[in-house]
Length: 491
Ligand code: SF4
Ligand code: FE
Image 1 (cartoon, helix red, strand yellow):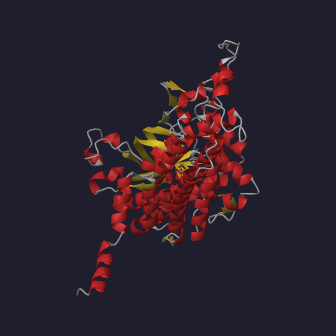
Image 2 (cartoon, protein in one colour):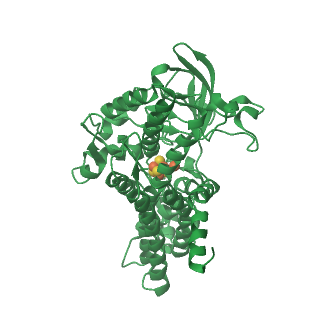
Image 3 (tube, helix red, strand yellow):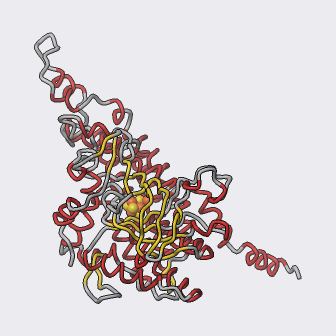
């Protein structure tokens, strides 16, 4: 059964997820002004699925049950499905201008589905059945699941078992007849608080010494022993200010990252998807990362669409929109943004079926996609700042614009002066529209949403070097050498 957006919000209230922020336990985190925009952002994935205009893209028939499900819970059955995934993410990016968080779970489903199948083939384990049962429940209840991969990693020069503190990578601490006890943490977890469940995966390929770190499982977000510490974002406390609607730039939506701690959490056998099969840790990581690198060719492009629109409006509101260099900058931004989309579509089109039957993206092209994402949004932001002008970071607050404190010789208020001096192209906009667009630019380029549009573009789904390693592995330089030899007549 598909949930409505409202039902999703209500479903979160029933969870006992432990959340800490600014050193305090947050009892009602659903209505917390700092957290709520990130919940609204996930809610959009439910609202759009209910909207007849988007239902075709947002919903799909489950390959497991034949029921209509949200595409965020789907196992991709074709290259068409892979492309529709990217299109759905672009749409959600356009509607939120933020990170809507639900993709990490979708990417974890697809990677875990195919990897558990292959582990079972080799070891005769029952992980695939466990996973399929779990996913059926997720699809049936229309849940949000966090895909948790990134460990704290401590000293990057040491393997998991060599760390001074053995908990710096999440590990199996104890094996019992009926399950395992896990300890450790996952960092930078997108949407963890807003998720009903978590799928935990290893963070990197593992060796035999690190066997107890090769662990994957599902657990509810309010499992005993689990808690989350909310990550700060630039300008986050603006959300606490009275009358700061315009100053937020995007008052409705935002992303969310948290530190998720597993302080000895018991995982029953039926929710375990890997427990010591270290030779499959790398496969799970590679597949998840591949899907998530594809994802960015959709979501970041959607946010880019909003940013390009904001820059174009800023130019118009400033009265500079007819200048040829402005037009050219907008062309350049569009070119860069659509190049990213090309990569997302290309790695989907070149997808192929796994042994388990769902579709995997082309790994080389997905890594090229993400490598471009580590660069182009920065250039797009640079051009947006160029077009926007300094006002996006120097403008007085919304409260000043509305202030009736009399400061002028003729009794004018602070608000009067702000209104007077921040008029732009009076034919195109009033001062408030100009304020709003400048703040939106600030929000995406260097405010709260810059977490998603900039730093996450750099490090989310793996830092640039991780893609370069994959590009090296998949790039077939030897084959290219043979091509050159054949043309040059070298035997
Ligand atoms: Fe989805 Fe993009 Fe957020 Fe990742 S960064 S969860 S792909 S919106
Ligand atoms: Fe991400």
